[in-house]
Every structure is written in structure tokens, then in C-alpha cells.
Amino acid sequence: AQSVTQPDIHITVSEGASLELRCNYSYGATPYLFWYVQSPGQGLQLLLKYFSGDTLVQGIKGFEAEFKRSQSSFNLRKPSVHWSDAAEYFCAVVIYNQGGKLIFGQGTELSVKP
Amino acid sequence: DVKVTQSSRYLVKRTGEKVFLECVQDMDHENMFWYRQDPGLGLRLIYFSYDVKMKEKGDIPEGYSVSREKKERFSLILESASTNQTSMYLCVVTDRGVNTEAFFGQGTRLTVV
Image: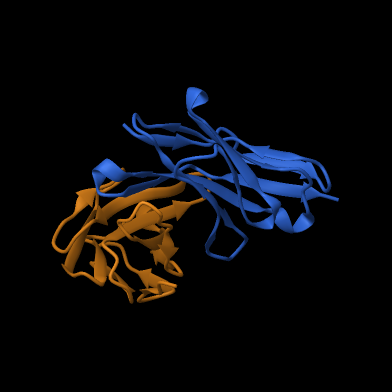
């Protein structure tokens, strides 16, 4: 069955440090991948998406993600974290041969310490 | 942008009640989804629909049913509400195109007492 796994439930980083959030997917064909962010009490906002082409994609707020087919991964990165980045991050995949079924990972909660 | 409207922001229902959650979109998008969001579990897919009168079970359909009689409206039904269905329910809409993103309703916080 198709699935999305975010191995880290909670991560804490210092402000100014680099960040990498992991995402692994299980899907046989070319995946369509997304990262969303949810700030406390807010809805989900799209950070970036990958459909094809360049495997390194740039998103909003200084985030980027790299698609690695050999590792079935789509990890999210940011070179320098700001306190306002504290939020929950969700990786998602669209399964187009199942009518566009959209599957989310469990989420990673990011805390930023001063 | 697509506007996705859920009928209620907060609901409190009693155990055993039949509960209806409504979701309406203002664009002509094919796909509509119902998820529940619980801490540490992310967004779990309950049901989705890719066309009128079409429905597919997600990962946790037990205790739920859905209805899509019109393209713009997708209803989630809790046949007999139980306390373990206390959760945040999110309606999500996507287009069928390749270059698509998801549009989210504001969520319904359901408490079953």
C-alpha cells in the first residue's frame, strides 16, 4: 500500500542552525510530492511541490527539498532556521492512478530554541 | 483561489447521535477528501471522492460514510457518534490536473461526549 513516513515526530533546533526534515514514501510510479506547514491554530500552507524535472525544488520561506528516487525520499531543508519556523510540517504524496488520492505523513513538529 | 467551506467550526454531539459534516467548494474541482487530524497521527484519510456519486475508502473508514450528490458538496456522516471520533475533521479539495495543490477547509473540531 502507498504510504508516507516521517520518521521524526518532534525535532528541536537552535535558531540559526540548519534543518532537515525527513520524508520517505512508498509508491511504485513517479510520485507527486508536497510539503505543507501548519502553524499553531492555523490551516496548512503549501511550502513546495515536486512533479518532475530538477530534483531540487525551491519553496517559500527559504525552504528547499530534494527528491531522491533511489532512496524514496523527499527531505525538506533550510540552511538557517528562524523562530517563526516553529510549526508542524507534513509531507504528502498524490497517487494519480487512484483518482488523485492524497496521502499525508504523520507530521514532524519543529521547535526552535533561542 | 478555491474556497472550501465547512459547515461548522466547532460541534459538540452526544454519543450515539448521527452527525453530518458538510463541505462545499466554490470551484469545479473533481477531488474532495475527508481527513481527521489527531496529535502525533497526522492527517488520516477517511474517504475521498473523485466524481459525483463516486467514493473510495481511505485508511480509516470504519464508523463513517460519505455522500456526494453534487460536485461542489461532500458530506461526512458519523452514523452513531462515539467518543473516539472526537477529533479535528478537515475537508480538502484538489483538481485532477498534474500541477495541482490541495485547498483546505478551516476544519471542524468535533467533540463527542
